[in-house]
Each structure stands twice: as C-alpha cells, then as structure tokens.
Image 1 (cartoon, rainbow, N blue to C red):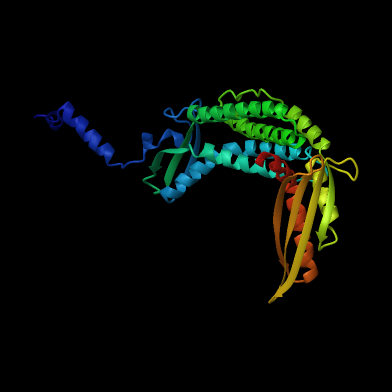
Image 2 (cartoon, rainbow, N blue to C red):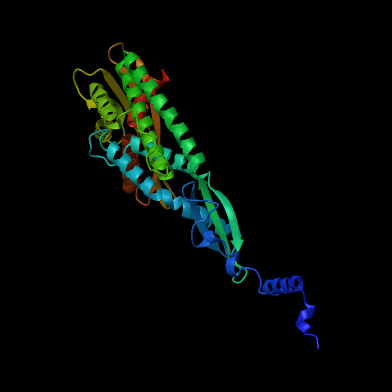
Length: 343
C-alpha cells in the first residue's frame, strides 16, 4: 500500500510549511526592526545620530523620536549657556548676571540649534501587530549637518577677520568699539556652532578657531573703558534716573565721569500714572541722545517705552522703574555702539 506522504512532492511540502508559518501573523520573530532595541545596519552610528519614539499614534511616535534625538544636544546647549553667562559677566562691572551679550547670543544659540535639528528625518516607522503601537526612527545625517555647520563657522571666521581689520582702520573711538563688539558677538556665535559640530563630528573635534575669544573680549573692554561719558539729566519724573543710567553705563563697560569726558549722554524720563478698574498703570518714555564733545555732533538717539501695571500705584511705579533698569542693563551698550554702526 502506498504511503500517503509520498503523494506530496518536496516542492508542495515547502509551500505548505511557508503557508503554515504565515498563519502565525506578522510581527513575530525577525519581523521586528533591529533599531527598536539596538542599532540599525542601515543607519550606523558612524554616519547618523538616531532617536527613537513609541506611541499609540504614528504622529506622536514621530515627534517623540525627534525629541529623543534632540536630547543629544541638550548638554551642548547647557554648556553654551554657561559660557555665555560667564563671558557676559566680564563685559561690564561684573555685578550683573544678565547683559545684552547674553541675551543676544542665547537667541543665536536657539536659532542655530533649530536650524541643525531641522535636518532630522523620520527614516522608518513600524507598527507592532500585537499591541498596535507605532515605533519611529529619527535620523540626522552627520556628514550633511556637519558640513552645514562647517560652512557657517567659516563664514563667521571670515566676518570676524573683516570686522577686526575694519576696527583698525577707524579713527573714531566709538566706531572702533562697535567693530570690536561685533567681533566678540560673532565669535560667541561661532562657539555655539562649534559645540554643536563637536556633537555631530564622530571624533568630536570640530573646527579649531583662528581667534581667541578671551583676547577679543579684553580688547573690546579696553576700548569701552576709553569711552568716557558724562550724563546730563534733562527730565526725571522718578528721581532715580541718574542711578539707573550710571549703573547701565557701568554694566556696559563705559566710564561714567564728570570731567574729561569725550561724550555726553542726555536723558529724559517722563512717567504718567492712571487707574484702570482694579489696576494702576504707569506709562512713560525714556529718551537718550549721545553727543560727541569733540565736535558737538549728535551720534544718535533712542527711546524706550515703559508700560507696567499693579494693584497698587506705588507697586506699579516700582515695577516700571525696575523694568527700565533691566532693559538698560541689557540693551544700552548695543544701542550706543549701534549709533556708530548706523552712521
């Protein structure tokens, strides 16, 4: 009697095995992508930074993968912020913890980081057939992102060289200071890019700088000390304007003097208080005019608007003056050096 198994050829048996295996459903065995729990051969760490995300919905998984990759830059951003704080404290009297330099460069760090992270791509997405949850893989091409950063660093180094050369050609002190200030800010922007590049660069080297930031700061601060400013209060609705102005000048690194000044800063402050239902408002303006005492010419003028509110009139006034004080500490140096840039 013939064996029933003999009726099945090897080809038929192979097909049956494949069909039975398929009945087990997807997602088992080798169907699970390697990148979910480890590295991916398609995106090796030497060429890519990667991030992973998991969620019930695919869109959320993608967002989480991008955020996971972005965490790689968090330490770099934190270090950059500490650097900016440290350097900004050396730009003026050293008594303030915030300055226009810190504010401006912090914005640059955020902008540059966003530009780098915009290169993140979602390379793969996979849904677990058992749980229904989505897994996403985000990747950042090291070569592509690194080259963009290197190009930006080269542009900043070239700009620094031009600014320094231009500073030496200026005969007017304020213009020299404006160029020196720009050189410092440019190299601080460069430092932020260098930190990002060191994260992306597999060997962590980046591009060595041609300029010493400490030396640029030293030169800029020496120039600022040569700018001797006397203040002239034309109108003061607070009784505190001399203290606010002189403190901001010191924070900016300028010398505030009564005699032998080379510039005069005219300042006028008006404040108006009025109630509005449960709140008391203070509105006003501070206007400054900088004049050269050597040729009696106006270097520039600027106005700050003031608007604060509180439940009590005295508190509203205090908030207005504190707001003005903070803004001057943050902005006065850039405003004054900006006068030279505008001419």
